[in-house]
Image (cartoon, rainbow, N blue to C red):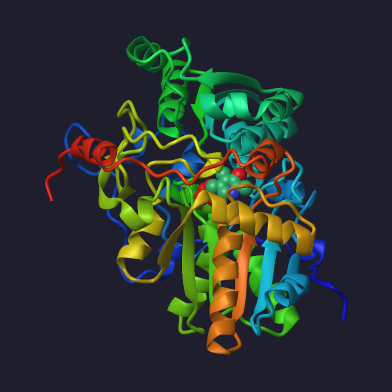
Length: 454
Ligand SMILES: *Cc1c(COP(=O)(O)O)cnc(C)c1O
């Protein structure tokens, strides 16, 4: 038996539809609210920001939503992605567990994010929108949208969190290679950015601030719409190609997971892998434990409150009910930039409240250690975000060894870390520390949660 067992599908096996978890849930998630009236928003509230097809997907209740042919054609550039059995990692850990991982790093920009970027670019193109704005943390989303936009001939402006802009110059170069314009956020281009810089010229930025800037620019220009790389229902929906493929690949492997893990920033790659399995469970299929892995330094699911909050720092978005650290929360500058969001997808938050999933928080150093272990056994260097899932999977494998029991573990390797080698270099140089937020900062941030009638 080879060291890296791969379970591959044919091009024709790319799913024909996205899977909508809302169809199988025992109760729907609470609706987004207008911050002014406190009433549920209608589709027209989102129309300045998103094309109508995506707004409809946001509230869709049917189980399957057909993937347009032009989107499937682009998916074919790298999908179906491989599912591996991590034999060498299993041996290294001396575990009776069987560890599988779905590898999303084979997309051109190197992560799962093009699964939704391509869909979003296509729907905008189809509705005649020539120009998009967006935010990016570590640069994965910005480069994915830049890639997708280049395929459909759209212009893109990317507001990149300042700390990452300086930490990850190659991500910026990648966005520019695909033809996007990349701006460090907070910037002087928007009212929000100028206000924040006036108060705090050294502000390192956050996803919440970058979202405010991108939304402001999209709202201001008739020819421009906004694209979000995580959190929203339609984004999670597009990612479900991951889990649908994985179900078929686990069949090829003749196995079924006992536990599924993925890292969770806004929750999209987690949802992408987990929702199709959870849907099968809700329809009477096998029960599976599902664990969202997040950083101790930005622990929205494990330490945040479940409340209505803004999606951005300036308070320009509708209110959504989610696990949140408060929209003013400024996470410390740790390296998993894609996990530095103050909130969690409303759909993921809702199923956490329903008790359908678990969450675990891991420290930066133990995650890099897991990433190095994985690279030295399986060969792929995980993105810093993805090391949280690797860490979670290793913990499960060691628990199985402890208990002397078989356990089938499936995790999502959401991206490779080839553009994140500075983070690994800092880790090897002993420059990384385990950061946590201060309790005072968190309390202050939560104190500013908007008040909403229950
Ligand atoms: C953006 C990103 C994440 C975090 O986003 P989610 O929406 O939580 O998936 C995780 N892994 C990688 C590689 C990313 O680029």
